[in-house]
Image 1 (cartoon, rainbow, N blue to C red):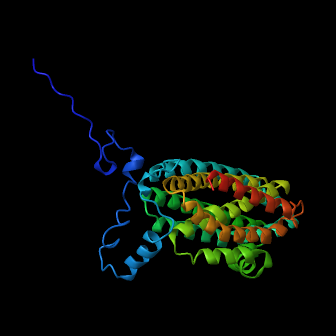
Image 2: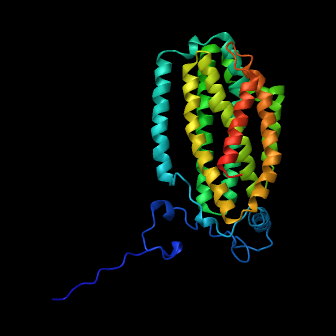
Image 3: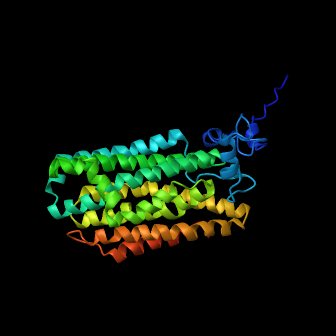
Length: 335
């Protein structure tokens, strides 16, 4: 009786001889950034073309590089499909939360003093949050591996999610407390002229000028974004709850889930890089020594606004919370 020989499971050549099937996560990311370290230039054009030279200078030429970025893995191992499913569930929760509070007309019951605080501290938020989105997309575009690109792009999508909800809630505030709250000038003028916002504005405008992909990643994810997230998702959420604004407190706390996912892949990437080349600790620390003080100054600028709410939070508490976040993140990254 003839016997059939069992076929060996096929592997995927891009992953090497791993003797297993690739996961969907690996299929959708492995070596997608094929142009990194491609000889003689990243893209199929004149090697001296400005586009090629830009990548060669600010990606391949970055001091934040290791021999192989393809070994990095997002702790969440998210594909685009996974991300959409995850955020669909979270947005369903936010929609239910919003519908409940709209039915209860919660916004109409907010005190005049609290609405004045929101005008100064909440309404302008869409401007800095858009910068965080843009910076995240830049990191994704310039990353040497699609495993990193996906993390950065999902982070940028998180920012857009937050911006959308800020804009929607601003409109709700305007309907209940005066149309001027929804005017572009009501958000832009504090952002461009109010003393409290200028340190953050300066820091973010500087961030948009960073070209080196490694410095952009470190500045954004180890300094600026953690500081902003602490102010918005934690301290402003707590301030809202203290001032009987349950909806805003819950809404902002929801975005902390996204922040924690961002911090997880950030620390994983730094640890991966340091494991491959311990000397990179000096490179990263050099950048954090520049950007973390700028982020601290931004928090110190905004902190006094918390002390002006009807039921305030002391500015020192806001500053201390941001410092604690920074220290915890730095330690988790192995720096």
